[in-house]
Length: 335
Ligand code: GDP
Image (cartoon, rainbow, N blue to C red; front, side, top):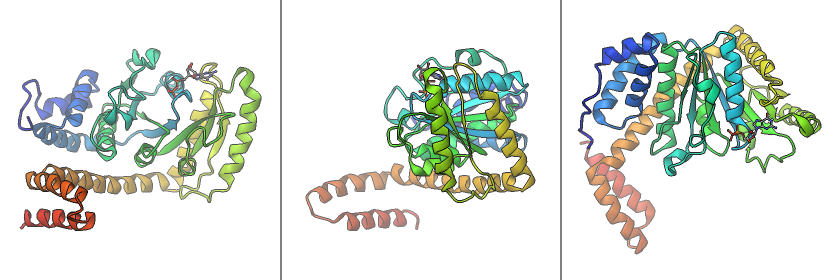
């Protein structure tokens, strides 16, 4: 299976030229190559990404998170439409760790963003699937570069506020937006302190109808909560605001805040410093993923692991000793 080479692949040059020309069909096909696990596609993907790299990066990358039901898709649709009206080209990507385990992912199984999806100025791509969050994140990162090279100047990367994927999204974006609801405790919303700490902006969503008073109260509470955190390296103090995607209230303010942030970090040098730092981290992520892949796909390791698993269960060997034996096997295969 691994060595199977699909017939419908184009030459690397065709993908590169198509992406650079902003051809959406070719862009989608190139992303399929990025997401593929076939060895021949991996080679092709590396070539495409390397070649489009100089044309990437000219965007603002925004991470958006919040628990399921907070209104992410509704918000992104309205926010995206606002940005398109302002003349931007918007790409919407997602990192959804649940898509690795279950067939229907949290982010992917609804018909989402119908109005935005039909616009030429918007490009929506559901989450890549993969065995590990790191692998999925790497693929989304490369997809983002391709979208930038195709002319999308605002990249929205969405994730569900339930776990590690926020850290991955934070690690590849310039600005991190957290959507919250009024009246639900932090525990209820499953938002951990660490995620609050990453936020450049907290938006209390669904601030409409009977919810307005509660939302204003929640705004003050979050402002107080964020004050406790030390000033971020960016020099930016996170903003809290209220919004209603359904009533289109507070949406343009959010973009204004993002622009204010961008101005600050452009001037104080943090924008580029952060991107440089992210690039280096990305290299390490790739090394980690590749090593893990090589390790667990090695025939010797697979065989030995299945034997040692049984030995551990029957108490013939301790887990620590078993791990050492596996590592020794791996080392030998490199001599
Ligand atoms: P997601 O799971 O975070 O993507 O949330 P959705 O965008 O699917 O929204 C979940 C529910 O909240 C839907 O029933 C929406 O109609 C509703 N909703 C989304 N935004 C708003 C809003 O601004 N105000 C109100 N009242 N409801 C909203």
